[in-house]
Image (cartoon, rainbow, N blue to C red; front, top):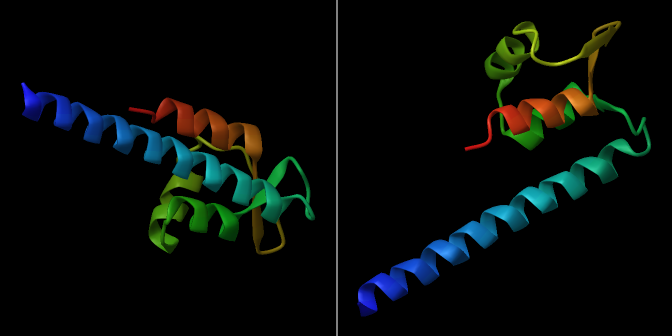
Length: 91
């Protein structure tokens, strides 16, 4: 019984930590993009946020799951489409 209680406490703590990390990532993303546009996120910022490399981000952007605008060589992703993508992949 003691082991079950201890395990439940550990799982609760892990869950809280994941929530805090997600909140911090969202806050960081908002701070970094607020000077550019509140609605559009540069590809490089999204790559850092998701911890994706060039191949992973290219596959995601080409999948059609995100609303992407290309200006010259730069790509910007609409914040709402990022939120929908994250919610869709929530476990």
